Length: 481
Ligand SMILES: Nc1nc2c(ncn2[C@@H]2O[C@H](COP(=O)(O)OP(=O)(O)OP(=O)(O)O)[C@@H](O)[C@H]2O)c(=O)[nH]1
Ligand SMILES: [Mg+2]
Image 1: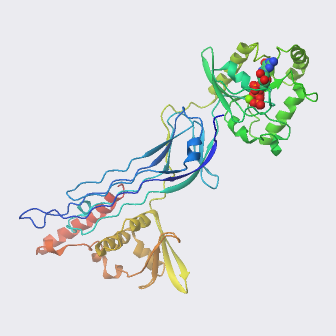
Image 2 (image 1 turned 120 degrees about the horizontal axis):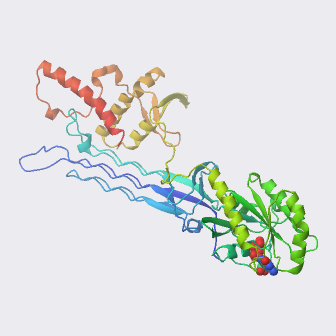
Image 3 (image 1 turned 45 degrees about the vertical axis):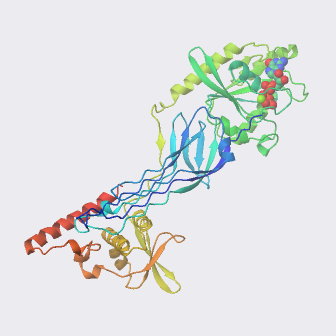
């Protein structure tokens, strides 16, 4: 038996961004040739993509840890680091992606549908990209960001138009084998089918898929037999077929009570009430079977079912059945909204990029001000804390975002603790306000006075305005990176 796995836990890690490079161009007779450190490359994403040739999640069961490659660091001579390679993980059609709490993150249906499960870290800017009119030779570069890590659960819900349900040995797998080219295992003992089978049926111009699930028995909803676990695989079907055994040797069974019991179990599972159903009376090649089928037919029709008498073994009534199913599938498809013809790529919900919050906490009797927000947290990750200039640059960025102002409003005073980031992963420092030194101070760190020449007053004013414009532009420029 080939192993079938329809639920796995998967741990994915995107690649980290490469660090930016801090380097100064060197050439004979040009001792200060300017910064030429390149940017780090982006880390690779981990993406799940539907590949219809795959039918099981088995591969991920065997190796549940997957990682994309890191971006390469930038180099001198304005050389950017190479981007990391995206890791594309092929998954079966109908794979549902959940987080550990069971929330659905994505439902991947249709060839090529993709989901970015972990996003690669950005590369850090090199000092060439960080240079500006007022910071002509930055002696630092930004660090690459770590790639995101995700623990996800993949669950397979088979995508089939028609699902066969019924008692063990009613002939579900036999029917699939004669209606399609699929060759499922068939035997005359119960629970031969341990995993769903899938076949493709062509009836006239209609092509549809048909799946069975392991046989159900009374009490399946309480876990008897193989239980209801596999009914997950019929959830997506648009037509349900009751396969009823007209030739069972069990004296306490007959097609009508079998149907009632299976219906009761389906109800217990829930969510399938609105699927159109038909009834197939199988094994009419057996003489007693044919008699029994004719006997129960009026009863079943009185309940509103369309009834088909067939024999999977003797190939009786199969054509009518396959065309009737094609019609039902056709109706269901017509009723459904048109499927997207293009590839669907689902990205994780964008984090709120705009703002940040400052909250006051107490830590050992001392006030602690916590700053949370996508930008400030990212900037902290990009900062090389061994480099004073890089730390100064971080302070400037935080300033321009208005973090200092908010700290003042929240009552922070010089020397108070400020933490940027979540409780378990924050950078904490003692706050030294720079705002009080006046707006002039904004954005003036990292200036390299070696490049400054004396300027007339009018020129200084123009420069100052240009600097301010540039500071704002620079601030925007870095965001889409
Ligand atoms: N005489 C006769 N036997 C049949 C017919 N269809 C299936 N069988 C036999 O019934 C037995 C069970 O058939 P399967 O197709 O494996 O039944 P199933 O519903 O898939 O059973 P599970 O997978 O255990 O739920 C096998 O021995 C088949 O050969 C039929 O039309 N006539
Ligand atoms: Mg079977």
